[in-house]
Length: 316
Image 1: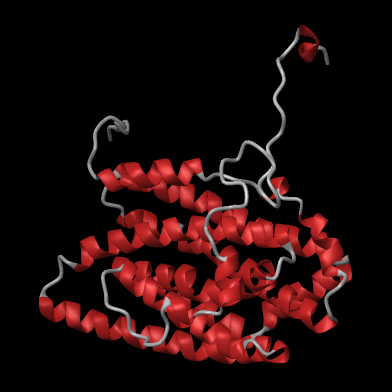
Image 2: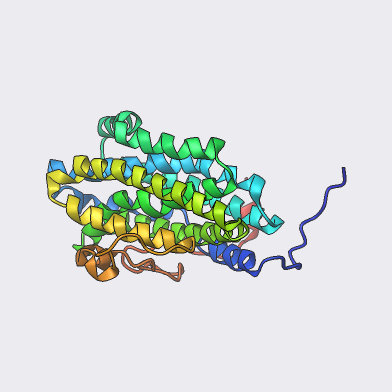
């Protein structure tokens, strides 16, 4: 067997190049976002509000653990180009950072006993476990197009139920650093969803018309099943703070966007941008509070200050 070097000067798919540049330019770490600075806001919240936030952040931790351990890696055998494999590698790294960042949020705002309770809840909640198993079953036994649909639905729809709360508080000028992490994650996921949707379209368009029709029926049935479970989860988590209806509409809006990423028409009426809670839309901008990464602005990402090296740096 002869090993072949990846030739980065050879362009097989320009979108691979674009997404690689975009994804690597967005690299970030949770340790650079001072979530503990949100403690003053956190202490003003009711126990019910804190419980909702902990549950949605905990749910994200579970789903991103699945994505980092299974969801991204299963895409690798079906790549069309070697640079696509490199892009997938970047996605895998970022999903691990996302999963870790949710732990950073929980430990920054809660005592250890509460964190343990949140982990116990997410590891045993039937609704959370159902969607994780439903998606992972497709990862393990589905074909390449089915796996891409599962990933786009997970990252582009199911995550957004849990994203709603941090964005809502950000729109109310609270929990700026927690929501900054969420916005960084959303920025990454928008790239992931667009890229996988594009790769899905390449494969889907190669299918005969009859197979496309059959696949579309499978996809619609999957979406209906996931949303039935998701809306039960929404009622369970959000009803105590009166936001369940707003969350469902937000999920429908993002479901339409996920379908569009894969080249399909929207399915859900009355789920356009203008229909979404304006407080959430005020906090959802995928531009971070400090999008250039070189200075601290508001709740933005913090970079260390550079200084010149000296001979003493080599004295141990």
